[in-house]
Image (cartoon, rainbow, N blue to C red; front, side, top):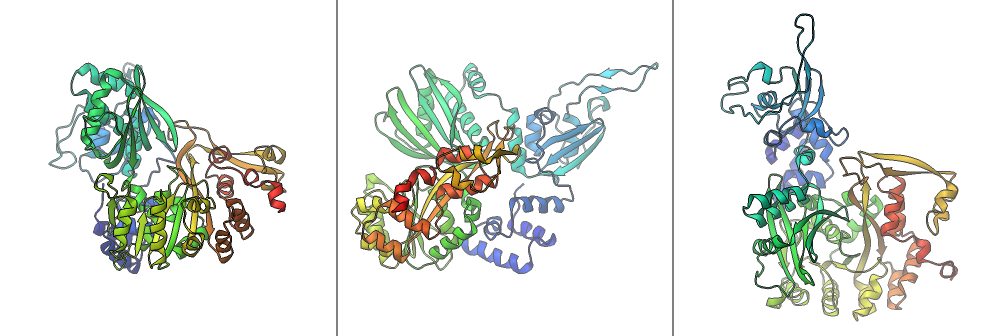
Length: 603
């Protein structure tokens, strides 16, 4: 149950989670920046999700139950009908004999206990002795029984004692998102639901699309792919950066789904041979999700890709994204400068926009004018002026940026530097008193330099404007619910990848981590992602290398001598600390031994 800012402040203050001064400062920042108090407290490090949940538990005078640490079995979750569990935000987490433990995020609901007693599906229970013999009553499934909500907890007429749970019920508190994530056990496979929708002969396309979107949101998917083939359409979800098949749509119903997507995302339904972009705002019980849509024609039809933009990303800080304290200090210093350029590099889906969003939040103050030009606008931030690129109206990155500079913003974000014209205007904006953030497609931080040179940016201008270049990738986190450690010998560790010997030098035994695979992570052993980074600070020595058109390898070699850690090295540290696995790291990043040969190192 969402709390108002005033209620949250009172709860945190009463439980001594924040001081009066801290709360006063946070409330002022929330008002000035037009953000929720919760987001400001999270950003300032005064509150974490765990502390927030514990504070609410103390407020309701209930024990706190961590579902992530002790997830209930599907059998326990199924003991309350789905509609009851969703309406009352409650699930059964323990059942032993005549005792029941129910986790809820809404303990203030007056009819909660009665609803549980009326709807709890009981197992076989031993009845009182009759003629010296014990008899057993078999469990029976019941349809949802709703108590009246008007007159208090026990205002409605009681069901017969034999049909309701008569034992002790203990309520514990957990967050609503934990309840929602546990209810995925009720959902049948997409293929089964598709068939049911088709057999009902109702509105097939809207219902199929709704089921797909709800599943994707529940499974924390970042992308949905609709891939038409000759006789079937495959639906795949990208979860934690990896694609998984989710279901298949019969070919005869796919055209209706495509048209539905086009209508909802404001595209032309009569256009079948050109790429189109649009956006959908999808609402369900879990909340509202902004979705970016792209459709391109392929040989067997029209392929749809949807990017799901999770709202929580807007609240993430640099620490949440996986930056070390040292890296945070470098970025915070660069982001507070009055002019210059900060670039993030990496492939599509590597978290570049999220990093820039975290940096923008640091500068988002009432006395700072921040404007962005993006294609598309992904995360809307209050207090920031967002411009959407529109090629049909001749509003490109270059033309939009040229007009934007005339409005005298303090901070400018350019969604992506794609061509020489945009690069040239960006460099000049950074030279003339503006702080500019942007992204660039490059393999690593140092490769951004030859990429800009290839766009005909003058090296002396580049050296004068660049402050920091960030190279990044995303790796999957090990699932915290099924993580375990194991040891390998040093010799085995050194054979894992080229150049491993120098990483495991002096070690006899090496402790690594993996995930076994559980219900919480869908059997993958991974849940969520974290960034691995490298920060190239533009020092006077690096400026000279840029001016002399040095190669990316030469720039990297010099920066490493001065202490720069490469993405692989940052990821290796995270693997040793149990955040990710070595296998996952090798999947997305190359070891330094592959990048720098012994011959180059001698030079």
